[in-house]
Every structure is written in structure tokens, then in C-alpha cells.
Image (cartoon, rainbow, N blue to C red; front, side, top):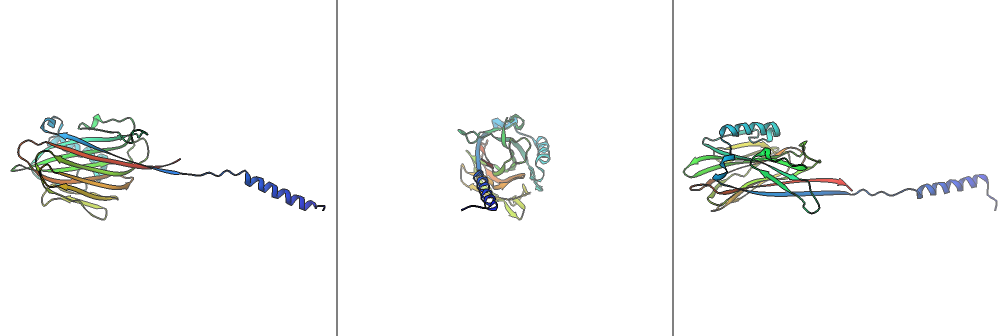
Amino acid sequence: MERSRRDVLGAGGALLASAGLAGCIEERVTRRETQATDSMTWALSPDDEGVALDGEGFEDYVGRMADRYGDSGVRGTDFEAPDGFGIAYVGRYAITRTTPGSPTEGEFDLVPEAVEPEAPMLIADACLARYDLGADRYRYWLWIAADPTDGRLVRDVNLTTLSAGLRLDAGTVVDAATPTTDGSDGTVGLESPPSGSFPVRGGTLDTTTVREAGGSYTTEWDGTLNAPQSAVGVCEVERPGAYDFSWTMSLGYGFEETV
């Protein structure tokens, strides 16, 4: 049967359309999520007091941390200090770039300026301030903060874990504060100072306390956040003689990428 010119053009158009469809390449986009957490334990004793801060040095540190973290600094948005400041330890904690064989590698030092990682994924600052109550009793103000928008980081990440605590080798945890939240405001304290308030921009707060000889106390924040955040805690310790305990911390981040 003879086909008209219209039939031929129609057929050709169909062929061209088919060819065009055949030339399409299907692309699949896969998003991969990475999460990493690092934990650190640093033993402290009176031998380390050479790097500890006195009252004046601690006030200077508090100011510098307020400049860095704003209202997530050491004293948050409101702070009541007791009398009897003893000493304060401060430190910097960094997680460096992940590798296939080693998910995280942490670096910590009691001299913050000594921590200068080449490829940091997350950096936290922390302090442990001691207040002497007398009669072999001491209160500790624990603070740790990180900013996942820090310009020193090698890539964009979210903050996922932040914790600070102490583990006693001698002495007993006799009282411990559990942070509470009211909307975006967090508070922490015992019946008397130190106590304070701080912003909670998301996530949850929790504490773990072991009230016995050689006990421990940890305050922790968990969530997914792309903004500065702190974790703060207060505990009271009874011990005779020189102290001997460990300062513990955890730091975690996460990110997504297209592969």
C-alpha cells in the first residue's frame, strides 16, 4: 500500500521521538550519612596544678569563651558563683578528619592553644572548675561547648554528641545536678551555687551519676544541630586528702553527602 507524505512524516516523527527517548541516561542520586563519636579520658591529680588556672586566669578564660560561643559560654545566660573558688582546669578537644581505617582520631590538651589539628572535623572547649566548700567537700562546675559552624573545620557538619564528666579514683559523689529545660532554656544547679542557665537550641539533656566510693558524674547533650551548643553540669564530691580523678568527654558529629 502506498503511504502519503503525511504518513511518512508521521512515521519519521515517531522514529525521531523514539530515538530521543532511547538516548536518555538514567541517573540515580544516593545520599550517604556519616556519623562519628570520639571519647576521651584524662587523669588529673595535684601534679597537674601547674597548668590549672587561678581565679584571675579563669575570669580571663570565661571572657574568651563568651567571645567564642556567646551565650553558650562557660557561664551561659545567667550564673551564680559560690565563694571559695579553688582552681580550674581548661582544655581543648578536637576530632580530626575521618579515614576508612580509623573513624575518628581525637586530640586533647590542658593547654588549649596546643591543640591545632590540621584537618579538624569538630573542636570543643571545656572547663572543670572546683569550688572548696570546707569539711572535705568540693563542688565542680563542668562545661563543654562546640560550634559546628566554626570556620576552622574542614567541612560542614552537625553536632550530635557533647558530654563532660568526672570519674573518681578516691572520694564519693554525694550530690549531683540534673539539667532541666523549659522550651529553649536550660538550667542546672543544686540547692546552692554554682548554678546557671544556658540555651538549648535542640536535642536532649541527660546525666549519669554513680553515688558511691569511686563514683562518677556525666552531663550530656545529644541531638542534631548546626549551631553552637553547650553541656553543663554540677556535682559535689566528698574526699579526704589529695584528689585523684579522671576528666571524661565525648564529642560527636554527622554529615550527609551525595555519592
